[in-house]
Length: 582
Image (cartoon, rainbow, N blue to C red; front, side):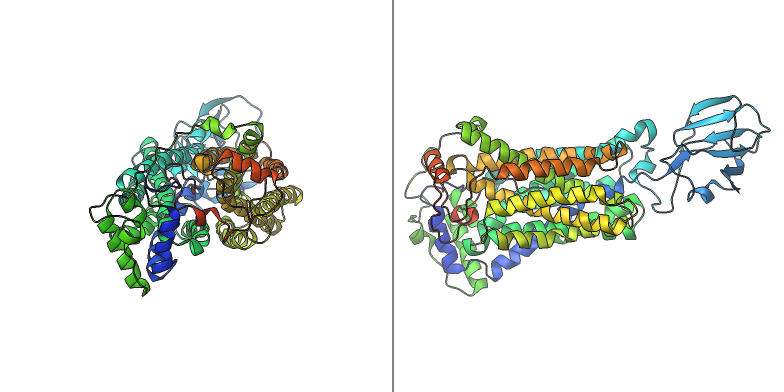
């Protein structure tokens, strides 16, 4: 990796913080870079939840095998099928009677059609013999809300319904893969190149998805889009933390999530205004254009340049930062004890490789790891379950999704204020148990009370969003330096498994309407109770070895630190294992 938590030669994180003391921790230059990078987070948030409306499955029925002369539905008679959608319910055993111009009478359901042997009986109820057929002539869809979706484009209904249900899980599988690939590449090729490559990929594959010619090419385009979007989210976190000083680093990193939430709100607004799936996809993809046009202005981070021995280039970046911030620059050669030939005063010491088994150092640490993994899984699982299920709450589905995104922003503000006042563990327990309670409340609200269901869901999303925003930081503080990146990386991987499972949880509502709330509520309650077993890290310094970790865990005394957050004490978390990924 590049400049990791152990430093690069004599380039320690403490020395590097002296750079920010000189040129500014979050001056004009860092603000400019921060908002350019954060803007692209909006695009990532968009594509992560675009499938909410891309894969809408409208009401449908078999297409009649000929020209229709008359339509009968219960007590309603019409000449056109389109006139009866307001009465037809896909959830009931309803059927439509049509009489063709050749005199045949057919019963049409969602997935089957039946031809009556008696052509003279046009009554709705019929007890005579009839022949069953699949929907050989395709389907007719209700277009009152959406002119077309991916489901209607390729008939992903009935026996092909699971193809539609795999759209979001396969996307999340790409998210898992992208974090590994681009986290590795950013340490080798640099942060700036990866940011440019991934954002360009997000734009190109986003547009490509709109012009795919079949379901399989659409899935491939979305999968590649997910890889690029995930890679961007991982690397942009590292990029931001390497440019922002410790006094502002925690707020800056946590509020990157807020821009992701704005993406959710953009999806809701675009879905309301654009009802054709491929136009909708193009419009959402254009949000990436401003960043693609501006990303050439982004410099490489001084941390990465120093880790590669490019001291002159690093000095130029520091000088530019000082000029923008109207502060005095500093000489890296003096500050970091480097000679003009570009060699460090000390060579980096060999760092022992650690494996996943090290997270189970002993019984106590192993228990801690399992609890942390459960919290990661619950956070991601609940986050996406609330967002994806928002369209099933009743009322206006576009407003519901918009509110699910908007409520995340105060959740992250709550975390930033609360974690340094009442403690990380206390905020996490409160958030998880609050989410469990709100899920229970949703289950007892009558189905017709749409407004109260939405309000309760917003409270649940607020709580689970707060937990998700905090778990990254809390995980890093729970483990010593030697396995910190491994702990965060493994936790985020388990979290992504939760995001893959979330869409399947939504589909379980067909078994019982409150199944998603039951699963999320149960997981949140169990996670919240088990969190009491974890130590509080507020006011305690970061540990380096397992021995220090055990000592801190067994000690009830809070040790004083200048400003106790993990992001203020390490230069950067290994991007290969980084987990700031939804």
